[in-house]
Length: 443
Ligand SMILES: *Cc1c(COP(=O)(O)O)cnc(C)c1O
Image 1 (cartoon, rainbow, N blue to C red):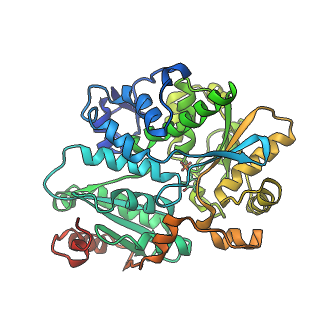
Image 2: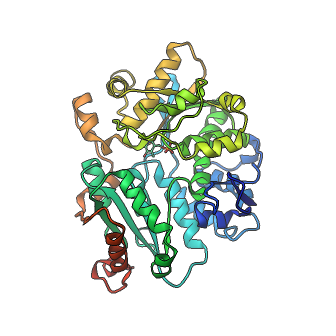
Image 3: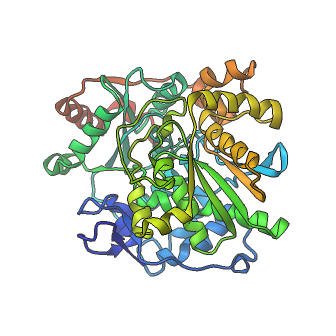
């Protein structure tokens, strides 16, 4: 199948090429040309996430450069079935997407993307994945490409502006991963990455790739876990599952919309934003008005201009029709804190600040008399945010084994001034094969 650009000024290209390219040449985002349609019975005999994901994704890749690699990619990168656990009441559930190596849902998408890129032909030189991060993305991308032959990762993060555990995680990989703590904020990091990715002369010396959330190779695999959760629920109960999704750039929630569009038994979809209320305002009837993001307790959702909104608009060009697809609500920091405390006291679950936005929205829906079975999507493990969560619940959050192992490793990040020339020097020295820190990670 081919993919087209949301801006319509770049040619449609095979999906595998769109995954390798990231952004389209006209600055648009790629979308598949059509959406295969499924009935629940089409998944008979498929139970695991990897099996369901393979059936769901196969039509996109048929006849393309990744067709034969797809089963192996699904098996390796969709290996962890996300549990749908009870959330206090009989009709409320928690979809735990945080059981991957860095304890956030981005592990699924980053893993799948790395599987695709390593199965595609590349040049002779290593490809350096350049990623600017405010926390979770950098760790998920680093984990996905760690020690993968032919790849290096350079992470740019704002020094002193990510949670201490997130900073430790970013510097703990070593091997082919280089962490750079930038003297600047997240926007500065993003600007550095964008400037260098646009520098064709430098890219001839150090081949660069990106892995940010607009990549089609990150969007597609995320459809799988919504299909897996909804099918499991359908098989148990014969009813559709509704979802509340913590939302920033809209990548995760868009995948749920797509799963429903492909025929999976999904009912309503509600977006939970933090105090960045651009989406709640749009879905309440206002014009779409992107703006700078503001800092909140749910920092991975501090987005004022959600990048995937452009895809939603391309899928539903009529705003009235688009508003029928979703609803959205904003959640303040005070409400996040209250929801974390309430979730443990009333539902017996410890949740992270992002998940708390969705839990708060579910409570509002129930208070208004909303019926049906609803799943709150848990996007990160609460142990990543002990500074916020522990004072609210009055006890330590148990740390999952993979996160504990990462936190036990030494961590190192090089300081970087906010200057493109300095980044070039760092990447050139990182690209030298004889660098001892790199050979330590070989094999
Ligand atoms: C990235 C992230 C989000 C936001 O997901 P989007 O796809 O950008 O909407 C929510 N929660 C956590 C923990 C995240 O890391």
